[in-house]
Length: 274
Image (tube, rainbow, N blue to C red):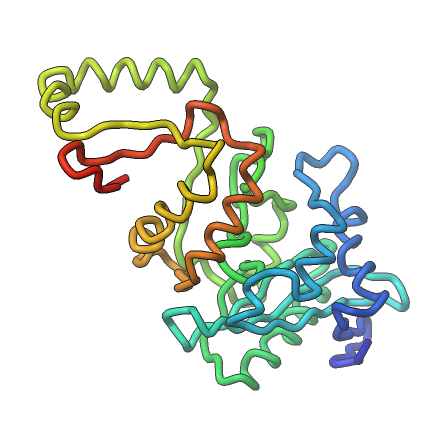
């Protein structure tokens, strides 16, 4: 550990991902989130591997990890990262942000991340982004009464207040919908009625096939260029290699809803279009 910043109340130290201290970084959220919190805890060993260079991000980016201490007690954490595959080279990211409800903790952490990023020529800092948007990103600002689900951010509601008090503002927003299978079936039926007049023509031109889980690698290899092209205008887009996309989706394969993932092709030439 290397001390990087000291205030009257807190000390921020940089953590070597290969050291034993990274365990304190990984374990911190369990002391931040109360037992009653609705969140999806990460797998500790997977997180250790990710931070230790096991993520494909480190083939085109670099990161630093910081822990905020009150005496010897961890009270916050943050990462700072730069991504050579990011289209906007002015931007650096902070991520893995977790903090007790204390503005001093947030300020100390963000100051350490900002200093590291500015030393690397970044004049715009965005987050939370855990390495890249293909990994984890965003901060939840509403809907805390609903159950969390895999892949969605979930953090204490006070994080927004801390970040705004440190000068950060919302750059863009996303929305998620909490739908049951019954909801999806009902909406599909309603959509089908509305499009009945053109559905026949559409089906003559296109075909829908379920994702073939038995040949997932080949399916993902075909999907990757289309997905990367589609997301090219997405805020925070990082032009990753198809192999990185395939690896990320492959890890989520056990959670794919059978029949819920479809591929659309033009019938005449079998070109993948969706």
